Amino acid sequence: MEQNKAKSLYIHIPFCQHICEYCDFVRVGYHQDLADRFLKRCEQDLSLRQGETFETIYIGGGTPSALSIEQLKTLLMLIRPFIDVNCEFTMEANPENFSEDKIKLCVEYGVNRISLGVQSVQSKLLNLIGRKHTLEDAQNVISLLRKWGIDNISADGMYGLPTQTLADFKDTLTWLIHQKLPHVSLYALTIEPNSAFGRKHVQSIDNSLEGDFYQLADDMLSDAGYQHYEISNFCLPGMESRHNLTYWHYEDFVAIGPGAAGKENHRRYTITKNIHRYLTEGIIFDEDIQLSVTDEMFEFVMMGLRLKKGIELRRFKTRFGISIETVFNKAIEKNIEKGWLIFSDTHVFPSDDGRLFLHDVLIDFMEVEPVNG
Ligand code: SF4
Image 1 (cartoon, rainbow, N blue to C red):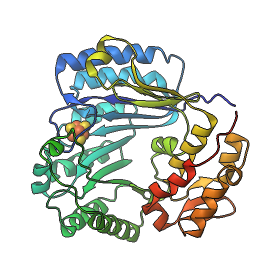
Image 2 (image 1 turned 90 degrees about the vertical axis):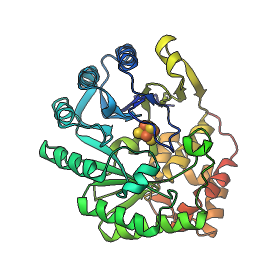
Image 3 (image 1 turned 60 degrees about the vertical axis):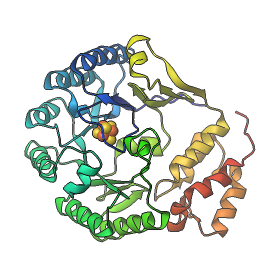
Image 4 (image 1 turned 180 degrees about the horizontal axis):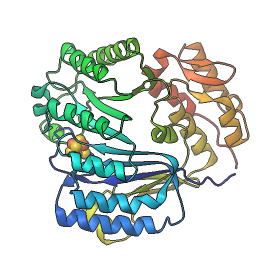
């Protein structure tokens, strides 16, 4: 089997100025000394990659924009040698702390795509979920990004928030559409036990209402010319997230930072979520799995069926030397009969219903005999 050279790099910045009520990500409150130590650690991790360059780089978090301007400069200088020609270089930002100086710095160091956490246009909802920015802050950041030449902007929105009505969400969608952003990601609120909401026993909305939110987004964004190219992601034509396509195409990616997950050379790993251990003990993994061919075939399908286009038959064959129909014959036939999968000359992809029931579709794909290789 071929050894993949990773084309993508993910760096997790675990600091946030405030902690959102729903958050279960790997993050801590921003602290200058801790962030300085973290950057030293990043430098060590990146030094192991000397000579490599990446076609996509994604700085996520946490909140990368929570770093001070000096720290952000240090981070961007560390990353600079790894930027390939035509690299899609994305950084996540919070409208709360993405100043014009930080934006200029990003431009100077090659960041060419920003993913902005907008979440909602209603201040009552932003307050409820613990976001400290206003809609005006988000609007201001978008204007500044365009002023300094970053047009490739993605915004995150949320639905299923406590007390949020369909009319509230419609206003958020209308605002997002009005911004003419090339990319929008929409996430349903999930109540994680370790989040503040989880500890307060906040209840999730029921599935049928969640379906209504999802349908509203699909209808409004499609009417506005967006392609619903992945379950949670919409884009104007040609503006898919190239970095995230690496995940959905099941290609290799390098991970750096606490809690970050990577996949390289048939090995999937998650770096320790414990920030103290990350800073003091070298590279420690919470998960480090050597993937069998059977694992990889299933995960290839699991990721690929998240895409509206689905899986390109030729890519599967090239990757594994055997056709997807041969390996997953039963699962494919069963789900075509249910109307959940569609098979064309070039792709296998989920129907609209199949996307809603993707979890059930994938259970059938798990029942495959192990393949030697
Ligand atoms: S949701 Fe994002 S910004 Fe909010 S605390 Fe979590 S990582 Fe930080």
